[in-house]
Image (cartoon, rainbow, N blue to C red; front, side):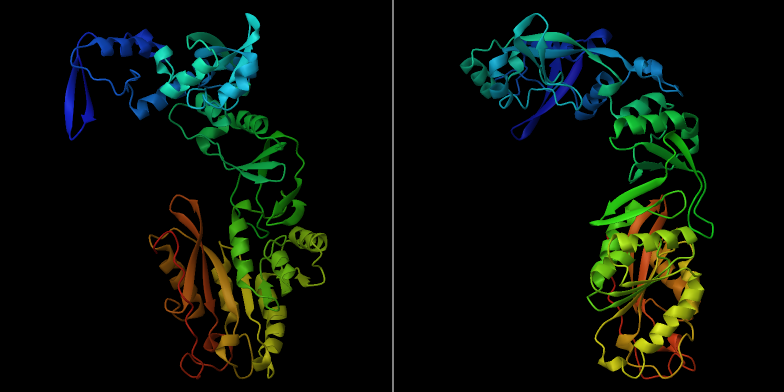
Length: 497
């Protein structure tokens, strides 16, 4: 006995259905549900959902599960480590509607609901028994019998003189018909995470595989190439970015070993050797956010510039840019990309340690910017420090950086310093750590912006603050000058820190 319920008016009626069992074999086929519907329609006390005798027999979750089973690869590919595309062949039964080929286009507009919606599978195929006809693939979870058509659909079929009789068609699925996630889900151990996302860097797909995925790494690489047009090389990071030059060791899993690539980000072009420099396509929005903060005439000091994703867009806004990176390869490609984007006359490029850059070229320029004539200038000075693993440590370089008497605090540089945090309150954590290095409290005079979630319980954030005179100038105390630093309004993010 099955007990089904359905809201009716302001009450719920329990429906007892006798003798409506479906065998295990029938339960595997969507078309078998048609017989159940017919049994239900004859059972005493049963009311239909509408005049079309359609009955909701599967909850949504069950429908999704069955859909996954029907259109998933064959089960015997489980555990495959070397890709065999021929092993993914599978035959399934699909309901079809036979129509004259000249009316297909007109009819398809009226059968959007009923037609099969499956990427990679044609909805209209030739009839192998009649060259003047075509077969329209129908949704096996909506179309069970002739009665499955809605009233409007039946009307169109009648107008076009189409017999609404539904037939069965054996459809052969191959490797080409499955999505990458479906293939990997079928191959990897059941219940394990599946790699479906990756960072795209030009023609390169960059993966971060977990330990349980490593035995399948070459298969995963080949699937990524097969299923993503334009990807010709797949690499896996095999260590963290913890060396001096901010690049990481990588292994080519599949495809060509060419790491020279070209990318477009926010309408700018960058070329570089991905194996020797740092590039993260997930920071595109952050590059734009910082760029929008600057106005023409402003000055930017980019302490860890990489190949130029902050420096070049800012220079395009007619700002003066000082860009630095310790990595000789990043320095080389930074110069190249400045010329490529025609801003080489607006960007001064350096190849120094971050501390040396701050205490050298930055100090010299700030002495001029904040000198006797500084009250006449109207532009702002920004310092970007995008080295999340260590940037906070470099804040100590601002201590007693300048000589002389401080000017108005509204002219002091605004720092945008990036950091990672695993703390339960990441914003407060970053503020406290930055404040500890500087020797002041930043909680009332800084903003914290959530950049992205790097990993479970690990956030990347940007703390923004104006450097106080007591920190920037020698012979100043925290309360010994008359220049109070205006607080920077706290920026709310999706996560309420």
